[in-house]
Amino acid sequence: MDKKSICSFFYAMMLAILLISCNDDDDYDGLSPAELSGTYSNKLSAPTNGDSLILSYNRNTFIGKDVEFKTDDGKTALLILKYVLPHDTETAIPGISLTAGSGSYSFSGGATTSTGTAFHYLGSIQTGKLILELSDITIPENRLTMNGTWYVAHENASYYNVDNGSMQTMIGMLYNLVGGKLVSNLISSLLDGLTFQADGNIIARYAPLPDSVRIGSLIGSYVKHPANDWNTSPSNLVTYYVEDNTSIYVIPQIDMIIRQVMINKQTKSDSGDSTIGNELLAAYRKINAWSTTGIKMTIRESEDPAKGDLILLLDKSEIQELFALLDLVKVFIPEETLNAPVMDLIGDLIPPQLASIAAILLKGKTFGAILDQLSQELNAIPIEIGIYLYKDKTIN
Image (cartoon, rainbow, N blue to C red; front, side):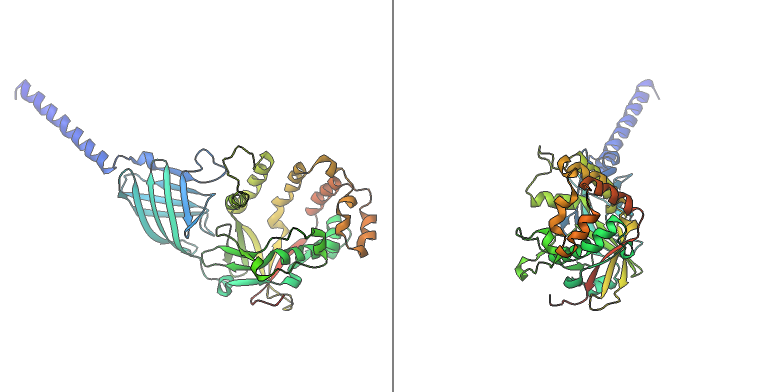
């Protein structure tokens, strides 16, 4: 073979390699795996890529989540849902078939998690954007979903055992004198029932307090709303799962709740007004863990059927992080309020028959000093707080 023939053969080989390479790129439809693989987020705390994920949960928007997408060849993919489904830290879906489109890939299928939650998924991905729809979500059946809707025991909505009924501590005195009844009537005034849906959502039937109602008046009685006052909460604000029919884990979806507050106030999250200030963001970071592990409550049979069929009981160990927020609360309170005598601020809230006792016990104490004392006592005394629920609607 002469020199000219060798050169021609070499050029032909190079052209063939180039054409093969072009065909490989066509297999990716212009998108290489390196462009697509990564973590997609719609968290408020991740503004740099907080809009790279569009996620829906049973046809409703779901924010505050991360989803990881991995592909090596543009033909199959691994999807990892992070704290998206109830009871699942990570939900891995391997071997997803990808269908190439114009500048994107699409995929669909169904799966069941190791904890028993079944669901379908439908999605598409392009550079910098993942769209994912989760549907037909069903968590394992439990004693709460079997009844569906549970109703608040309006006359005795709150169960509480604070410092074993003692009046020797500040929190024991405040809660056992007025706090317990106030909380019970506040729950009764705001909440009518809870529906534990099969998809893991908790839907509340609630009503706002009328503008004319003062908090202090709730020590005596609760607000009895007409039927048309009650509203239904949106989906995906609070989810749950049940373990062994003895414990419920309530998961407040913090980003969704903040989003709903902004919607209710007709405030855009990207407005120049700093609705979420530095202090609120600090609180957000503290309680955002609840969007992962959830708040554990014990499901206890009521010993008094007249008060309810069940008690959902919250132990103080589950809200220990919340105690630290007392220091943050002080940031939002004006200095003159913190330095004011507490009786000047809450005197009207105390029932007349207890006013003289409270005046002696609270004499000379400022509101700020009370907050400091409560913060110390919360770590030292036993606290159980719960809510009574009926299986059937009662007349109240």
